[in-house]
Length: 126
Image 1 (cartoon, one colour):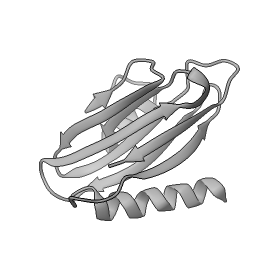
Image 2 (tube, helix red, strand yellow):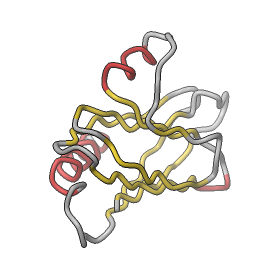
Image 3 (spheres, rainbow, N blue to C red):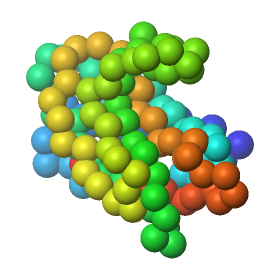
Image 4 (cartoon, helix red, strand yellow):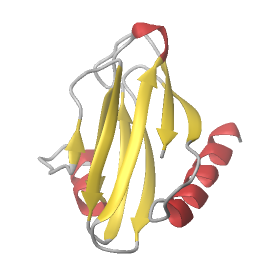
């Protein structure tokens, strides 16, 4: 139930806020299990839309974050080569600051490299 609420919050935010200016940042906490991913699809309604998200992992642990379009996300899930619009290295924190074309995209937080530890990740949507 908690995960569903966070995803609904993300959808509402992504659908209405990314193209708007002068909004307060919104922070969301997600927990990503060892060897797992967390993902949230979103729609960009206009070309050259600014997409800015900060990420910070609790307890000085590392995570990989990437943004890809919906078709490449399916390729990722199928274990095939895929393209990204943004990808971090393994990092404790970072900032996604990119312009995206119109289309369907997915924000992915990956903890697939971890064997034992779940990670709490704080995402800040600007």
